[in-house]
View (cartoon, rainbow, N blue to C red):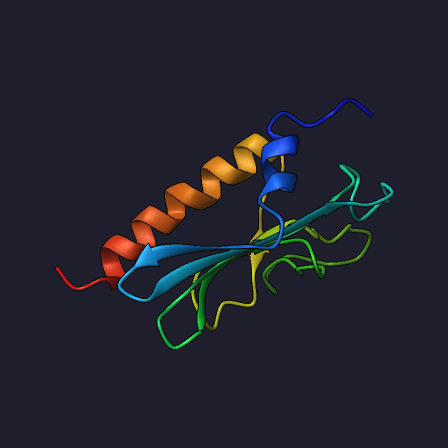
Length: 121
């Protein structure tokens, strides 16, 4: 398996909590694991944005499978482990992991968008 672009950056951020101002913060957990059918890229990750009181309001992770919407048949389908939670009550929607660099880029772009909507002007 070739190293994922941006992997060293993602792994260097493991365990960090990054202040986003006004009490908002980002937590990053990331480490390599043996590749499996569920995690073929060999990276276990959780990138989350939290409001001042600690509630997660955005998250990208691969901790559990996400079933597609009920309107789709599930028989014979592989459920996505890479997914994102778009708000506090979102159970997750599939996220297409391409590499660690793209994961970081997608996550922080969405952090900027969410903070723009949540922070007072």
